[in-house]
Length: 354
Image (cartoon, rainbow, N blue to C red; front, side, top):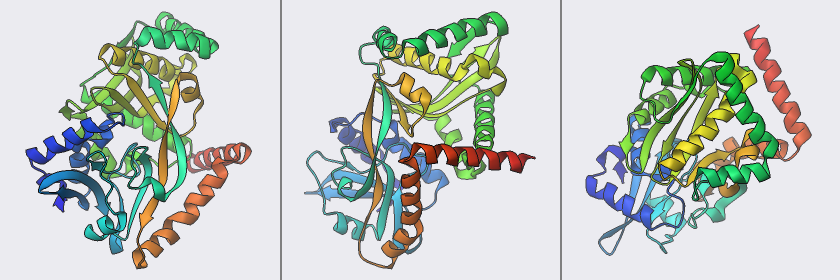
């Protein structure tokens, strides 16, 4: 059992080797750099190192709470998590939790290949992806068939933005810290405007994003993409990329330019630039959204739930998490109720601002 900062270079290299052997997409949230970044801002972060015959056979990154209630590393912000194991290795889950002094292990974006924890899933969700394996031109041709009105309208708005606001310029990997601060400000305002919890009001999330923005590793690089008009940022996105996957994370835009749909333009330019870098997939994460339906070429499953072992900690987990999770599931499965809930959240946000 190690603190994240105690991982040696040999451990990190073995971690990367095991990820390379996995059949799952090389999502950057599953790399050691993400775990180590979380460890800097979450003191209860740990990594269990699994050994077999004297050889390192796997890693389980997690955070430990009161009474051994465990959670996937970065739960709440990580869009992909689970154990990193040698192919074919499926340890006894109860024994693993006991060795980690955990009464439960909660997850909400569990990778589909996780045979260790998928049997404990309570729900399956779709994460929306854009397949770029054959290049941007092929992707755009798919959109012309799949979402012709969306593509035509978005490209027209991009041209109109250039005519009316000034020259449009896109930077795939912007290094200006001021642009990241601008994005975080937009995103915080969006959370408040829609009645949702402002993630950037939590210091650990702001610190985590700042640390990852400086991370430059082959399989985990913080990437800030910005769309400019006349030198002014109008939309931006911060995410993580590996050599083959761009994990979309925090997109936002300046509401002053909303009529030009700069966020949609930004996603098209991100797809184009990612394809030019040899990236074969954009993972837009779980959660239904109209723009995802227009942009996606497919879906991948992710899972939500918790592995538990008998004890007080597991009972407390169930009491604290399951009723709320089931209520959210009930609302999500009923579009009219979900729409009403969304309107209620927005109304409450307006009242708080008044």
